[in-house]
Length: 347
Ligand code: NAP
Ligand code: ZN
Ligand code: ZN
Image (cartoon, rainbow, N blue to C red; front, side, top):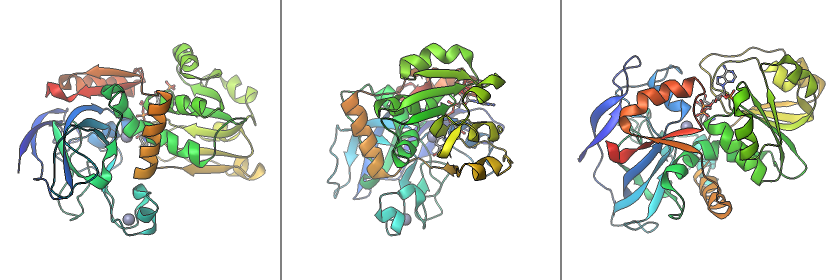
């Protein structure tokens, strides 16, 4: 098995540092990918620090992967050497259940092999992510990436992109709909770009007053600071749909009151602590509180093709691997415009 350079951590309390990992030899349906870039998702921080309580170590995070096909197994038909490709949050699934049949592998009823902090389909071998020089993935779980787009700026589409695109499509966001995006970080800034491109009237609700100019540049018509209690009075009953990307525990109630009758708020942020709230705001206006997990292979490809057509990519700050720890700290402080991406050639 080839040994390759990676960056990861041996424990929840250790920093990210250089390490070696092994990748399997290519099986007939495998694609060997030389990784050029990997985005830093807030989920990488939650997991590397075991904030969700399910971490296994050693852990190489990273599930916003872009690279070039270096080698293909003998039975691969979908890709050839030299293709630009992407890998997102999972690298395999049972392929048989109703979710897999519907290409919603993220909701697999059998076993989803998450890209890292997960197990391969043998349910024994730990998976390792994209903060590394290469990865080996079954061709059915690899995405086509338009080589004309900037690879660094495409990487975040593989998680931040699909995680916001999927619920916006599911709740039929488009022309005539008033949409709020809560939290202008990696996910949030993609949510603004997509909701705008789909034709909705977009409002950003943010704790950071200094993000207003960016919010408007990204496509928002309105911007309100959530630290100002007047925001929650002024905007009561305004939105058809709220996409909540906040990574930290917060009171959901004031946001639910911003929905119209029959409006929905979808949570995609996964704080480390649970939140309690009273059901009245839901009941009184038949509102929905929902969640959504990334997106399946078919929809991820659809999103990447939509981005290529509309020239949508992430706003990124590209860093060398030696700055991952600093990037973690700045992401936690909401001091990122709007996604750190690791240049994996620096490993
Ligand atoms: P991020 O770049 O850190 O952005 C989160 C944003 O939330 C911040 O930029 C900040 O925006 C806002 N925020 C932070 N702390 C806050 C607080 N205490 N109160 C209110 N707002 C706060 O993170 P991300 O990578 O976008 O990820 C966001 C969350 O989604 C994480 O929990 C991540 O694990 C989760 N996630 C879920 C999925 C899924 O499939 N459901 C996929 C990927 C990530 P402002 O400065 O604008 O307030
Ligand atoms: Zn992610
Ligand atoms: Zn399945």
